[in-house]
Amino acid sequence: MIKNARYKVKAVIGDAAYDSREVYEAAEDLGARVVVPPIKNARVDRHSPQARNRSVKRIAKVGRQRWKTDTQYHRQGKVENTFFRYKSMIGDRLRSRDPDSQKTEVILGCNILNRMFENVRPRSVATRD
Image (cartoon, rainbow, N blue to C red; front, top):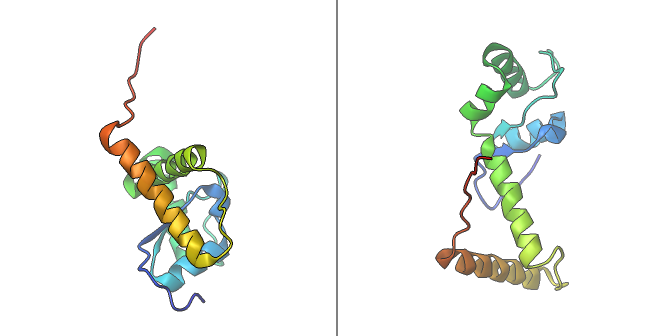
């Protein structure tokens, strides 16, 4: 059980690699919903967490793509993109050893990226051949 959570966690979103009992139990302890696509051949199982079984049933009913839309699973991709951007611009490791200094380092990195993208938002344009 996770105790003394400092922040309220509303949802745990991850790819199929996070389809495990431990993830569901940890999220349940935090009162968070789990948005993790079950593995492709997942079946309803009485030993599986109820949240997972609900996802398996819903995917069987409406399809995986509709489930992803309904659960806002696309947010997971946005988070991965944000971390990629952070690591590309700031670096892939912290330089500080002290936890308080590490916290400051991460905040500064996020503020730098936010400032950079404040004025110059990346713009994606689809082109046709």
